Image (cartoon, rainbow, N blue to C red; front, side, top):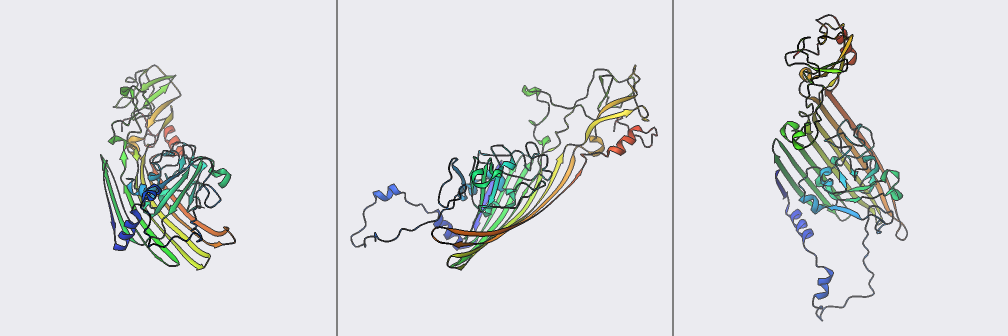
Length: 451
């Protein structure tokens, strides 16, 4: 897959800040090898108080202390810039600890997948399950999203807005509670950004492409800062038909044949024997016992569904007094997707009263089963139109108390709306049963004919 990435600072000030941040810092060993200061330089004041730098670490309630047990896995801004991923969840899945399984935008298999009807994303550490991993935003809990209201979708945050991501890949329930049994992922947003930057990415593969355009801008002053970002991401769908290695029949590669018998034309099953329906339709004389039609109903589905994400963030900090600070973080996103899935297929029980009932020669059943796919009635695949909208906000005050103690009081608000409209994957059971039992050719359903 070929990819082009372009990052352009909009202002000279932003370029200068980036250059300063990227300047190499000498190591301590190098400092020891340097020549001593000239005699004219004043000696250092040994009585001066050392500068104390506060470090907040994910996985511990004690400021400045590293978590006990599992080491902290950090994905910094440099790694994010070097990544070819266009969404936050894809950046995270480049770390070995995070899997694309369960609550995912490409599949509903695994734990939590059944309830993920909008194909959202979540962080799943080591495949234990999405509901066993706690996702934090700036070290604070966020309001859950999604169909089940139990996960946080990292793709609602632009990659441009991330300063770094910290992951504790082992259990952290002693600090955060039972929802962190598998571990914790902390998404930390960029703050104190000065200037503006535009980023453009475009990637192309066979029958597939994805693109991203985003911007971040910010300004800081002596007592506060404001930083805002916006990102538009689009990817096309990738059909199973566009990859020859994707298929149910793996016998040519030394595997098994996983094709199904619910086809078009399908099979009539009666008396424990199968009769393949010929391409021209079934008659009592052309049904051969022991024959079976097999087909691959998954070949036409999307391996990767089409998706468009528009997401933005804004964060604000302001010192109210010396020791009291106000902060606010807001992010919003809208995700639109179109997914092509498996068309409806099922075993139909056809009674003798059906106007088109066909019994194999030498049989006289009251009912028979037709293994049938609605691919010729609905089309080669079902279609799901998906929309997911999210708004999340946190505001609070941080105050210095006595000693090293601090007081942090905040509140969060979250709003999420999901909508899915699907065609072609279900049937009206009552209407279908009535049509199968109808003796009127004008209203009866014929599962044994060619369409």
